[in-house]
Amino acid sequence: MKYNFIKKGFFPLLFVVTGHFSLAQDYWQQRVEYKMDIDFDVQNHQYQGTQSIKYTNNSPDTLYNVFYHLYFNAFQPESMMDVRSRTIEDPDGRVRDRIQKLDNSQVGYHKVGKLEQDGSAVDFIIEGTVIEVELAKPIPPGEETTLNMTFESQVPVQIRRSGRNNAEGIDYSMAQWFPKLAEYDERGWHAHPYIGREFYAPWGDYEVNLTIDKNYIVAATGVLQNADEIGYGYQENGIEGKRKGKTLTWKFKAENVHDFVWAADPDYKHVIANVPGGPVLHFFYQETPETKEWEKLPELTIKAFQYIEKNFGEYPFPHYSIIQGGDGGMEYPMATLITGHRSLRSLVGVTVHEALHSWYQGLLATNESYFAWMDEGYTSYATSLTMAHVFDGEVDWFNNGSYGGYFALAKSGKEEPMSTHSDQYETNFAYGRAAYSKGAVSIAQLGYIIGEEARNKALLRYFNEWKFKHPDLNDFVRVAEKTSGLELDWYYDYWVNSTKTIDYGVGKVEEFDGNVLVELVREGALPMPMDVVVTFKDGSKKIYYAPLSIMRGEKPNETDAERVILPDWKWTHPSYNFQIEGNLDNIQSIEIDDTGLLADINRQNNKWTNK
Ligand SMILES: [Zn+2]
Image 1 (cartoon, rainbow, N blue to C red):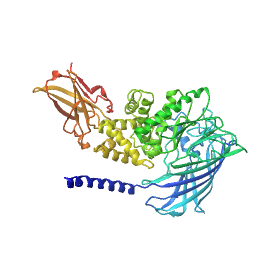
Image 2: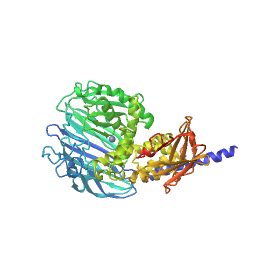
Image 3: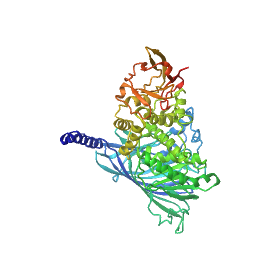
Image 4: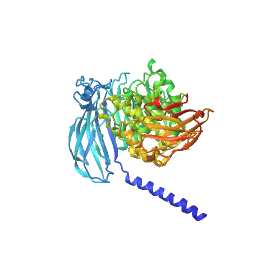
């Protein structure tokens, strides 16, 4: 007995351990250490910067080039962002033709002065929002190099995400504000021009020293290192004493992040709140009649964080800052910029959504250009659940929620596969509905396919195995497969790489030889396992479950009803028959998926009722 136990138990354990280690060895990611000194002039909205990046090449390839993003160069007439916005059929209302109308004092720019690698000057050219650098000497695998740059920048008027003097009167919303090294991964360089959206960058540490007019309060990614020195104790009353001279230098450090945001305004009110056992929350906003709901925000954000950490994984940073700024809501490491003139529900909604991006984007840093739906969709899904918890309600996926958004897309004739590059969708509508709605449905519907418990476990396991990395779709699929024991490649082949839709119906129902024969028909091209709920006249229910053969297994029964597992349905077969014991008279109704989690675009044919 003892020998058998060891034989059965020990070897699988060994296998699991080796499996895990080989995964860690195969995966690599580049690393950066930024040090920046910024001298900011609030009169001209310009700043001088020096930047040092220690760059470690963890790839198996020798690198001969590097690339930087220069995001502010997008805010110039005739930039790719400008022309795209003026030629796409449904431009973002915040951008439209506003970039074309900017004069020299209103545009944004980064001008590069000196650029050196380990003390030697390098050749580079600036191509719009990208610097192409030819290195002075190649970086072999496993080696590091230091890149030093001086630059001069001008903050554009607020057009999109960042800029000065936003609609609510916040002076500086400083996102995408510094020359930023592009990411190199197993797919190569990602020196994407800044056209509309989506960010992707190497992981690393940031040290930012920002010298600015002493009347400004600065909110930023990272932890303030010199609160005492500048007389700023992170207390509710804001700035106190000690401020001499015209400027102050704010010193921030952030560890293991892939971006750095800051915002500054002389009139910020600063409120702090502690999540018990979790991070310190900072709130920065101008106290006006339009921001009165911010008073209730700390308590509700604490409630949200507690729920999120329990269900989606532990928040690993010491701080999270909710900062009034920007032009809507946008996520950054350890912080968000949100507009603040909102009703309570809208204010909490945007805060929860952006905070959840700390999980789906901040920590699970997918390449947003290719997998925007993995951060917007997963975030939207988790936001629905968290908002229901915070306001003690139920999730309504169907009316205004993600399913409704997806169905409208599927029927619009404008749908494109979710594998489309984020900037390359024909319409902003198709991008938005795919990333937010269809992305959220991908996760809700996964619960229909593998069971809710396995789906929830997969989400947590995905977080724990892939946080602080750059996962992609395959990494999530593998986790979901290992957690559920089911094969799932087919689901993502259809859901992500195609616009095929789900439509099942109940066909003929007839009595034959004292039993009932039921025909199911597949009208849509996208195959799915079938939960058929049969309700009998006596009120009892039975589930007839037909797995797809390509799943290679069954999900567990998570309902109280008895379940009959039918033979697999092969996706090549447009119809399927099964038998219910007993007379037709006993049956009240037969319905495909009574939960609504199956994204069946036509539910009219899902139910047969005995009349
Ligand atoms: Zn989002």
